[in-house]
Length: 262
Length: 222
Image 1 (spheres, rainbow over the protein chains, first blue to last red):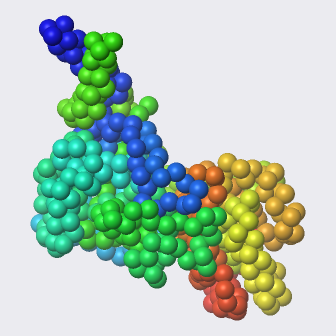
Image 2 (cartoon, rainbow over the protein chains, first blue to last red; image 1 turned 90 degrees about the vertical axis):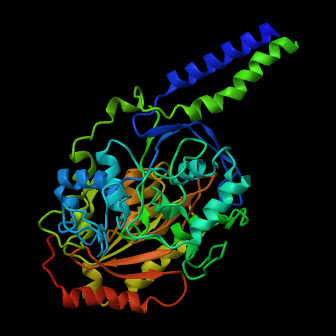
């Protein structure tokens, strides 16, 4: 028995150090280990589960303070400077001024009313990138205590409750929410988030709640349909993404960054 | 047998926890290039050139490659109405219809407008649609000099798709599902009109092309 215990401890220690040595997230990021993701929207030839390689993800959404540093360094992305091609009117609309987030956009709260272009530029400036849909959903599929949030009643209730709650204004601080299994905060419960490839959600805008796509508007080698409409949070997010355009600025839509493992 | 299995199982069991638990801020691999990269890395490709309007797609200075293997910038179409669509050459579904629609649109333009208008196809498939593949497509679809066929880096394809509002995704077999969208750019490179879907006549799109010359006529620079 003692031998078993010692072996267990040794194995555990080895596994821990091996994983730590393999890839270390930088400050503010955690490693999401290689693992499965079951896409909600799949074509008839697509596998129902794909493997998402390990990557680093920010533990919290980008804050107004973070974004202030970005616009200080990059005048082009200040509210008064950014052209209409890269953000609709209302960009950083909660801010008091170009370099002043003000009372409606507390420094510790997530930055919102930013376009996909602005989010992408911030990520590049940070030496990071926006997460892909598969990465974001993989991280968000975990619950508080397991990797399967969909079947963790407390987590499911938490997410569904948030869908039914109006966003407070100003928004609470980023990173204050209970972390999920991977140590990531606020994937639900605070704001919606951009993903780099949000425009891969091919649901025609004029058939809301439709899980299929309209062949007139989309050229499709195989029809793309929703796999599992019972996963309501994932379905909501797919529908939301399909309604976006890259220049949109939305009062409760922010973002976080990701990074590939070198 | 059993004693050998236990450490292995223990290792397997602990692995995900060990990784999930190591949220502590510390850096090695990821952090090496974590400092804010030079500003140019994010913004250089989007710096508005003074010559273009705020809504002009010609602010993008991504370099594309045409079917002759030559570099092309979208700004080279400045001064001309442009009819642009995104497609991929191996598509057997809607893409040939989109190209046929663009031909119909062209045929319905008044002769002087037709002479000014440029037709541009940009592929989603930067892997398979090499210049040679695009040249073969030009041949197959009988596209003359008014047409430009372009391929580009994936990030540039994504950015253009975002600006045009084109959705696309690649399936496991490498086929692309995508919006069927024809966009009319005015001579300044601004989106003047978009035609979604495959049905209906091309009259409205043709009128939109003509209108870009009537209202915003600029002297073609080539």
